[in-house]
Image (cartoon, rainbow over all chains, first blue to last red; front, side):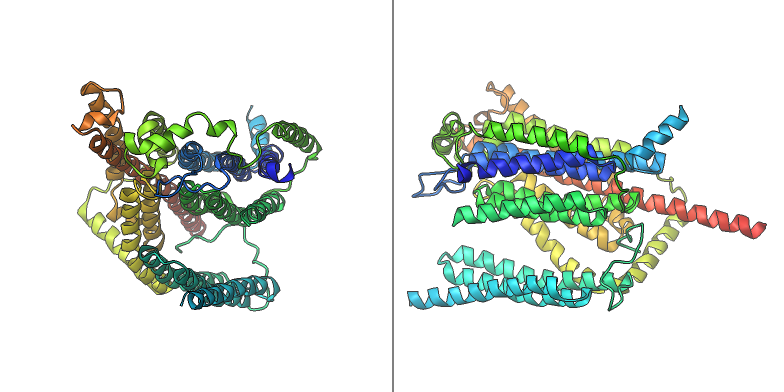
Length: 117
Length: 113
Length: 354
């Protein structure tokens, strides 16, 4: 059982580390880093599920009968590229926030907002 | 013949792995930035070459050998350049020989001054 | 032996993730994130997901690190210490984590061939794709043919994200009307180039030698995707990274002279339109949307043509969106510096007047 579920437990740990960074840290860049750790843990989860013991990469060749499951690979391949595009959008927002508020720390931004009201 | 190729390929692979490990130990044990970089820069090139040559001997497929050869040539170009870039960046940002801490600066230095 | 690699790589990943939590220096955090991406790419290779590993190595370890570095160059590199106590967050995380671990206890074990995931759609892809699509790389045939509609959506998402970055970060450039201005600008670029030339001599020469090979490799990945790992997504990212390399070493203004902004914006749109129009053509020929067998008399040849075209569309869009994103960030950074230095100059002038 330890070996059989090891990958999934690691995925849970990584996911929770990412989640912790997102909720406990105030710096927006650090939050985006946390989100990408979270995201990668989901990728690892899908790819671990696709693995079949004794299987090979899903590229058809003679003399091979057992392949890994190609479907999760497809889903994650596109998710990685979409992930970087959305991360870039998040970073662009952080840059704009820095320009407007002069800071990317959550507390300072809130303080400035309260002053403005 | 087969045993000869097997033995030589494993010798290459083992030497390569040893060099990788010694580079890693060097990064941890050496006192300042430049000696650390020396440890990695010197061992990395040779280690990559050794491992790739070992894999080439191991693999009978001609096309795979060609691909490994291209990777070898590319890495021989790229890793010394990367070491050079690191060293010159360290020089420009005033890493003195003795301190291994980064100088305190709020802003990251832009890549092209 | 394989499980040993698995255990070690995953343990490294956890170690790096914890290190990221402790680190206060954002530059170190981003470097660690790059290593994290590279390690997860190696993990994907160990899990037989070669296509995914390829993408993760170029995106996670390459482009995302670069974009984050450009961002912290603008936003500052140190993180303020957290003032409030983290106990509440820690409690939430531990409770959620233990519930999730409790949930994994019912899951089929890692690597078991009897798991429900492997029973339903995957056998059809593995057994029949060679007759139905005729492409050895199952990932490509699923990506580009069976699930083409899904991939179309993803490409549109990437396109939209690129447009979003453009809308957020685009700088209004002063119109250069007089020719003298332009000539002076070019002279200025040459001056900067000359001053940079000494500093980056080795890097520049090696880059000049490598960039053609990087482009060649991108094309190989683009068109060899049917037979080996690769395809439009990876090729687009590699293509864009060659352009980034050029822009970083030869300066943004030189890169702007090589690559026209409106041209890459057009290319991004053309990629999406090419993808969509393949679907429309198959619709007009009386088959389903993205059923490529309508493209040719021989269904297999039609599939090959369709996959080639849509991979080309994906490659165009991904490459140009990545270039648009990077150029927007870099321009913003240069402009911010110009504004600052202008401000300093103005201050100096005012001081001199006093």
